[in-house]
Amino acid sequence: MSYIHSIAVQNADFPISAEQMMHWFGQHISDKVAQRKFNYLIRESAIETKYSVIPDFSQAGKDILFSTGNLPTTATRLKLYDTESVALATKVCQKLLTTLPAKREEITHIITVSCTGMSAPGLDMALIQKLGLSPETERFSVNFMGCYAAFTALKMAHHICQSTPKSRVLVCCLELCTLHFREDLTDDNLLSTVLFGDGACALLLGSEPTTGKQLKIEKFYSSIIPDTSDLMGWHIGNQGFEMILSAQIPKQIEKHIFSSYQKLLGQVGRTEADYFAIHPGGKNILQSFSRALELPESALVHSFEVLRQYGNMSSPTVLFVLARLFETMKPQEFEKTPSVYSAAFGPGLSIESALLTMVGK
Image (tube, rainbow, N blue to C red; front, side):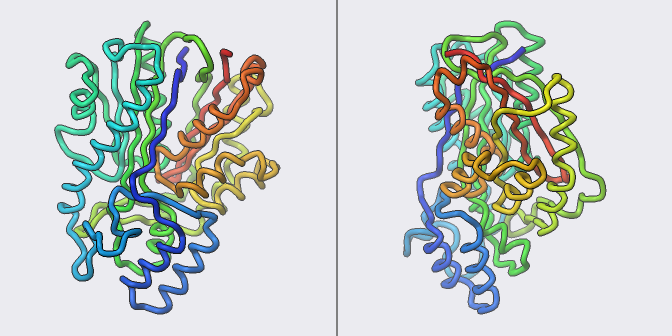
């Protein structure tokens, strides 16, 4: 088996309120129709704040990338990604390591996750050096998989723990979505601009349980929804990474999520989960999920709260939800070993999910 021993989350440095985002957009985009659409999407998004590694969107006169004039090239954006990703990833991993009984030299593997930038040597190598990990640490990277990529990393860590006793796997998911703002006034891009922010999460997994509260990984389930590959995409363009995000996505999730949920629970002999940690891809996605499983929206309170406070940060977002659930559960709840169904959605369209149980005291 494998166990999540601890989770740490970290937002980027610069908060952006909904009002600041509307003001900034109005200053940079002169098209009045686009302004009205954007402001409507902001008001309907249920996002009050999100974060960026750059001050451009929230502090007037502090432009790093998006000063008036030509938009930065992809090369310029990725150069900034290289420095800012290492800084934010180091910060969240340091936060995680200060809470752990395990020593740094006990970490045997590292998995880094990102779809908003890449280079070689990459984030995995930089973290080994910044954190003072062993140069013999085995390294893996998950790139360009989008919002469900945290599950890919968890699967890799789970397989490592199962095949290698005594292993300790550090997972770091990091996305700097705001570096990829584009002056594309299509509905897809306006929605992406509203939804996405920057953040990072780090986890430590082990092949054996430790003391205190932890999450035991029971089973994973993956499902690709047929004939939906054109509904979500993430392409590298000359002026940043370009998102395709169709308004049809919530309907497809609502149509297919119940079957995915049933199949995963059926594999472990359960008929329902006790708690839910669902990726808040947007308000409509969460509402579609609750309708499909006939759940009150209160069952997704942690997902809605992460959306409100941080927006959609792509791959780390579902882990922010899991961390909130983990932190708010009382010790006596862990004694009942309740189950947690967690799921995220991404290009494919793919539904990636896991069933976990809360163990320990």
